[in-house]
Each structure stands twice: as C-alpha cells, then as structure tokens.
Length: 178
Image (tube, rainbow, N blue to C red; front, side, top):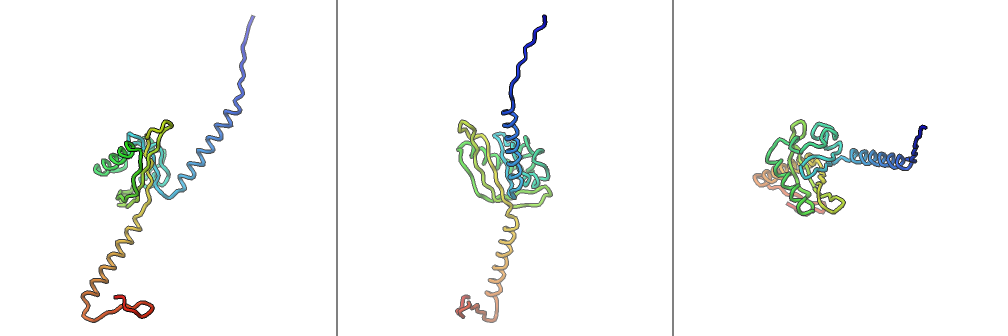
C-alpha cells in the first residue's frame, strides 16, 4: 500500500503582501532618486546602507555599487574621513542631529564642491540609534556668487575711498546714501 500526505497552503495573501512591499520599495527609490539633494544612510561601521542617485552621481558610481562600502572609499582626504567618522559616532552616541554646516568635498571629477550638510540619527525598533542619515545640498554656485559679490563690494569701496573726485550715491528720493 502506498500512502501520500498532501498539504496545500493558500499563499495568496503572502504573495499580495510581497507585491505591495516591492511596489513601496520601487516608489521610495523613485522618490529618493528624484531628489536633487545628496542622501545617504551609513551604519556604525561608516558603511553605506542606502544612497540615492544624486549621491552616487556625485562620486561617479551607482547606488548599488556604494552599498556596503565605507565613505573612505570615496573621500581621499584622511582628515575629512576622520572628521566625518567622529561626527557620525557623536551623533550615534547622543541620538541627536548635526547641522546644517558647510563642508568642502571633491566630486568624482576632482572638482572641489561645497555642500550644506545635515545629519540625523535613525533608531532601530528598540529605540537604539544605529544609523546616520546624511543629507547634503550642493551650494558651490551660491558660494561662488557670494565670493564674487564680496569682491565687487571691496572693489567699489577701494574705488570710492581712493577717488580724487567726490562721488555721491543718491537713493530714489534724492537723499545721499554714500
């Protein structure tokens, strides 16, 4: 005599949940990659666990290639690497945030760029801080324009202070403003 035991499990709900989870992951990735800011999440070992397309483009790679690698793989200046690690560890120790502050980093082409950076801790289910969220905004052009404006103001001051002719600036009401 032959016997067989057959067990059937309805996995429709599980498959539906898996599809929904994948749809949500795809949506989140699409949103993150659409943001013009550099976004990354690093673990306690300073390894990337998530990066968006903008961050990967900044370093001339892909988000997938960055996952699991430490930020030191993309930053050549050992002092900058140490500073970033110290900052991350301090945020993890306090469970707090840092920034915004300005930092100068080299992009994939070696160009020096200025970023406005903010960091926040991400805690696990038990409330333990275990990840650091980093958001950076490229402010290189803004910094360049600020420096250009400062040079123009200094040049105007030098010209006015050294002019042998009297120069007066009037506002719209005809009042002397300088």
